[in-house]
Amino acid sequence: MRKLTNIVFLGIKELRSFWHDKVLFIFVIWAFSGGIYAISTATSLELHKAPIAVLDEDRSQLSAQIINAFYPPYFQTPIDIPPAAVNSGMDSGHFTFVLDIPPDFEHDLLAGEGPDVLVNIDATRMTQAFIGSGYIRRIINAEIADFLKATGDTGLPIRQTIRVKFNPNRNSTWFGSVMEIINNITMLSIILTGAALIREREHGTIEHLLVMPLTPLEIMAAKVWSNGLVVLVGAGLSLWLVVQKVLGVPVAGSTSLFLLGAMLHLFSTTSIGIFLGTLARSMPQLGLLMILVLLPLQILSGGITPRESMPAVVQAIMQFAPTTHFVALAQAILYRGAGIAAVWTHLLAIIGIGAVFFSIALLRFRKSVTQTQL
Image (cartoon, rainbow, N blue to C red; front, top):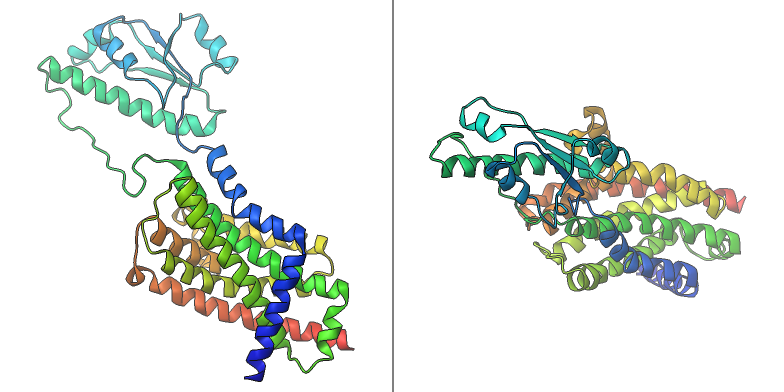
């Protein structure tokens, strides 16, 4: 009971220290509020008002039907241009797409000759070029199928039907806002615990703790639970207030189950913060170490690109990272409404990895304390 009391009171001391550090306090508030909103709304991963021009050399009913199928919000209203304006329009960046419908396109199609439609794409606008090319192909195929059906031609025997689950409008805000909370949980937990240890070393309070009847385990456990609590409360409020209320993003699964996974994940990341705090001697050094640690943890965890698209070696290595399992767990719960039966393996993995990281950090912290005493 004495050890538990020490851990509780030391954690309260950490919370008071965090409250008086106004810069860090404001940074955490911004990260879970304005930062979430800004990142979610400032960038768009879906096609939105892409500029498109049309070189219609057929001037038929079918070509007009295809042109009229391009409209906002995916595309801007198509601009009819002459052949001489194609290259200049692409070179100047006025158009991302130029659709070239060849002469006698409708006649050749009805004759079964399979004519081609040329689409010029400005690939320097990478996101629009990649997504827009698929949209254009589907729009043209759909209009041709409708035209052939109206003329009594069976033409295309198969028509592709796409059903999008979990995010039917493919709104990037739904994805970005939740993923930013997940990334902030990892980033802030490492920053807060590492900064807390360095702050005590700089202020000399770590020596005061060492002359008290306290063990390194009690000091470290207090930093873990207090800073983890700050991040957990911030994430819960952000998910409810910013994501669900302000941005209107629906959360499919149980918020309580997600927070349980976040709490277990914080056990790992706060331990990483302690470990980095024992290596760094100043805040600038901690910042450099965080670049080396945070970038692989976040980029290779599957939160930005699917893990299936990564090399097999990277996938195998990242199985030992807590962020990999936390991202998979959070996406399954918040996006797809998964329950405990679908994510229990990730929870066990997070617990096991957290125990390993905590043990390594504790050993390093004890060594650091011993060197300080000497």
